Image (cartoon, rainbow, N blue to C red; front, side, top):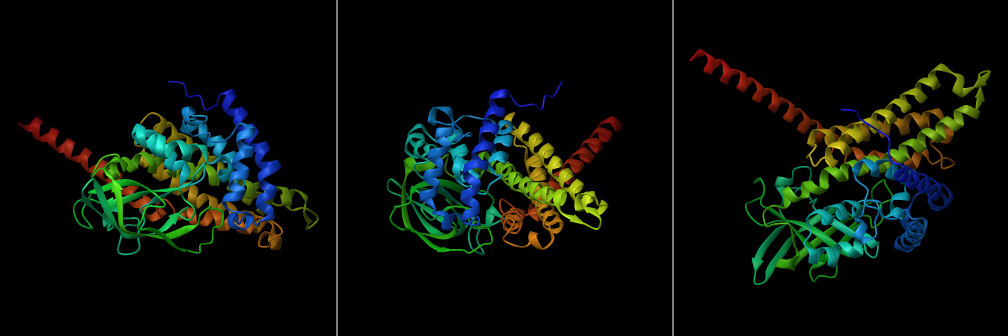
Length: 410
C-alpha cells in the first residue's frame, strides 16, 4: 500500500500561519522575558496571546471543531505543533501546551456530555486552564502508577478524596483538576484507580509550594497540591470507577507525542541559531561552517531531527488508526528526549562562549529541553517497558513453537 507522508494544503497553510505568528509576535515576547512565562505576565500574557492566535485562525488546532478548534488528527498536529514550539511560548499562545492540550484530548474522547459542556468547552476556548493530578511524593505514585496512595472513599452522593500530589504542572491558576485517586485495593496493587473532575475552588483542594525547576516556560508552574476531604459528586467521575488507568491511556500516548512535537520546534531553533552562527563566523582562515568538525556537528543535528520526525509520524499514524501504539510512542519519546539534548549541546558547542551566554537563546533552550528525559516517563522506564514487551513477544513465540512441536508429536 502506498504511503503518502505529505500533509494537505489546509494543514500546510496552518503551519505557514503559525510560523509567521511565532516569528513576528511570540518570539519577541519570549526573548524579552528570557523565556520565563511568569516574568512575561503569566495568565495575562497568555490571554493576550490566545486572542491574537484566534485572530490568526490558528488557536486550538487539536481541539474539536464543535468547541472552536481545528480538529486536526495526530499526524496533522505534528508540523503545526513543531512550528509553535519554535518559541517556548508558542504552545501557550496556541493553547496547545501541557497539560491543557492532553486534557482537551482526553475529555473530548471520554467525558460525558454534561462534563464536555462544564469542563471541555471552557478549556478548549482558553477561558480556563487545567491540571492533571497524578504524581505523588515518595512513596506514592511516580513512574510506577501502582504505588498510588491518594484515596477516594465513597460517601453519600459521591466521593471524598484525601492525599498529596507534587510536580503538578499548571496547578497555580488552574480552573479545574483531573485527580487520579485509588478507589480499591492498596498501594502496590495493579489497577483500582479512578479519575475525578474537581473545580479548583472545591473546599479542601489546596495548591501549595511551587517546585523550582530549570524549565521556566510552563505556565502555572510545577506545584504541590493537597486534597483534604475533597468532595466530588458521582457525576464528576471521569470514565468509570476503578478504570482510571485504562482511560488515562487515551491521554498518555498522544500527550507524549505532542511533547515530542513541541520540543522538536525548540530543538530545530537550536540548530538554526548554530548554523546561522557558523555560516558567518570566521576563524582559522575561513568560516567555521567550512571546517570538518563543525560540519559533523551540523550533520549529526540534522540526523537527530530527521530521525525524530520519522519516529514521531510512525507513532502518530498508529494512534490515528486507533491503536495503543505503546512501543511506537515509547520509542519516539525516548529517542526524541535524548536527541534534543544532543542537538542543544552540539549547538552550544558550535557557538562557543556565546552559546553559554544570554546573548543567544541556546543555554536556556537547553534547560527547557533537558527535563523531557524525565517528564512523561524517564527514558529508563520507557526502555524497560520496550524491552519487557520485546522479551514477552519472544517468550510467546517460543511457547507457540513448543506447543506446535508437542501437537505434531502426538
